[in-house]
Amino acid sequence: MQVTGVWVYTLGSVIVVSLVSVVGLALIGMRPERLQRVVFMTVSLAVGAMFGDVFIHLLPRAFAANGGTAATSMLSIGGILMFFLLEKVLLWRHEHVPHYGECIHPVGYVSLVADGLHNFIDGVLIGTSYLVSLPVGLATTTAVVLHEVPQEIGDFGVLMYAGFSRSRALLLNLCSASCAIVGAVITLLLGSHLAGLPSMILPVAAGGFIYVAGSDLVPELQKERNISKSFLQLLGIGAGVALMLLLTVLE
Image (cartoon, rainbow, N blue to C red; front, side, top):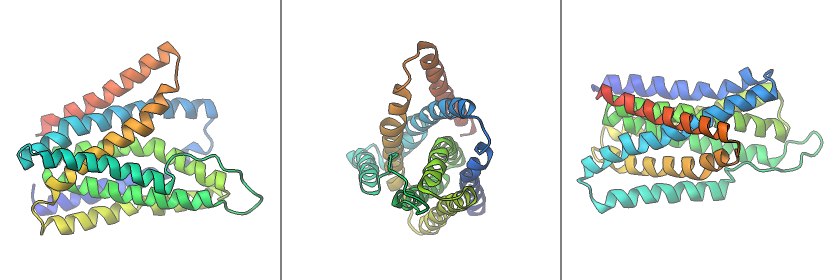
């Protein structure tokens, strides 16, 4: 793919990913029961899409580019550890903190910082993927979007819970999501000069997706004990993987 095409697809993708942050606007008037059903299936799709992207697109490309070396495996493990540390330091997981009066609770600002860094990394992942090929870029973008929907729903809820108004929570969420554009632009600028950048970041991206899907999303799915709903979760995961598999026809 030509350089112009890489920039067009990458910027278009990160803009779409950033606009996912306004999903809270459509959820403001949604009934709790319906909202729960939407999140229920979206999380399952996100798990399948992220695992599918890792094992169908990211890791095979990384091993092919690096000759299947142990360094690729170590970079993948490094990605897992990096996301683990980010979650530890920035309190990425949902926190249940009391709200005091009209003051904005610090958890709101912590959530914004964590989400901004997360979106920056998403931009890096998307930019890196498009530097490899169009199918890998589309696969990564799809996985990120499916992951962003439940995450942005949660982030919007945290900001509201911290004391922000609905309009301000939406605006701050959009600003935080825009960090993906910054990450993508930096990656494309560096990638045009550093030929080995994609092969180094791809396994790190894979490790990050493995960590987020395995440690954050799968445990949420495991909270559901109903057999029929669990079967729907399995179908959702399968659909996410199938979507990643279908994207290979573009290769």
